Image 1 (cartoon, rainbow, N blue to C red):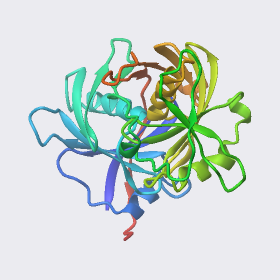
Image 2: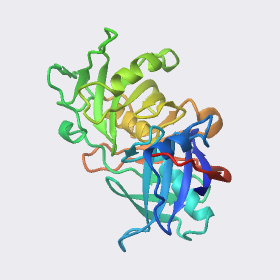
Image 3: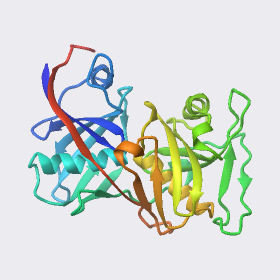
Length: 299
């Protein structure tokens, strides 16, 4: 089967985007993995499928598959690329669109300067909804004067003997965020896969490593569920900022620098801090190239 695709990136997080507005492509998990393969396919962190809306209150639907072929709930950098894609391909003339994803509806806005703002929805801290099973893990209560009363960090016992204290939350997908002194020296390759597959996270988890530069700036690395470490992670940036605000370490508007920021641009994340307040993320999105590829017949 020959398909057309567009390669895009947002802050270095890269995607293969497929136009499925006239019908969903019958791709198997193995074919998604092949597309994402950087040696034999196109190469991407995620595959984004752009689909027509099935209800009148939204403009589009889209589905997200990780590089391992599994479908996931949300991708902030992908959402920004989604807006740029449908605008460039003349699938809509709107600069503000509503898109249905697996976990609900999000609003996306292309700004006059070309940056894209995503309403990421409110962060979820209810452990059962993340989901997170704390059985056998004793939480560490916070006593910092600016931290949210009653919020806790969770020391995760890892097979390498470490027990990093993580903030647990969901941004439409699960995140475990730890504060580190120097993100360049953080044990991302070692701890990332151990945290991702920790028994406390039945659906696995994205592992974030956050360095506080100042109350309005962080540096971040993320080991993404089903992908590995990426140059940027939009939901990871939002989760890190929300965690930092609840820990009393950050203000309500934060610049997030990731390994891809030097070439792909930084992200700006804003959150007022209330339980019902949506997180808003603004950043770049860019088309890299268009192409066609013959997909092998993989089960």
